[in-house]
Image (cartoon, rainbow, N blue to C red; front, side, top):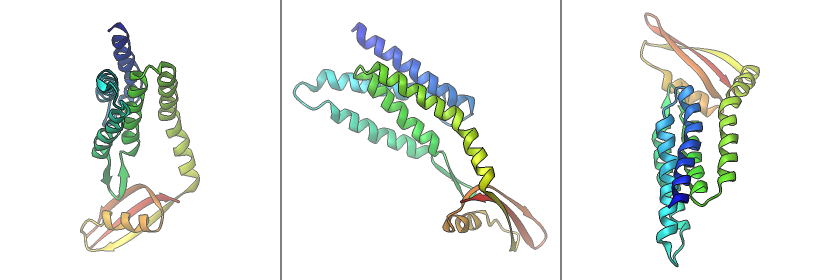
Length: 184
């Protein structure tokens, strides 16, 4: 019983580290969400080991992946011709994996994975922004009519294999101008 409590507390602590980074950057899944994911994954893993008997306790881990995939899918959105939330979805998936690792007693692996994930989430966005500025181009598109053309223009850039970094539409009397920063 004492070992299980240690595992639950460790899951809360490790989830809190990753959740803190998400909260710091005002992302959809913050401290509470990530802690609940690591904690639930640990609990599911502990109970599956306890009740498995001669059965395969790994089946529950597989179901955790499926359930977390559902959660992660819910945070991925299409916004102004770009897809957002993929990193948050991956973070949710990572939090579940950390919870499973804690549940099976792999404390060092769970802790090291948390540290690496935290550094990736914290440090790599600055590197990505720098790389994007090296290869980013600005495009201006003028459209007839004053309706919204953001999705259409975003789709054209996606078809061309370009990643839209920023898209802004300004409307004039009988036309609209769309400025797009894209790379790729």
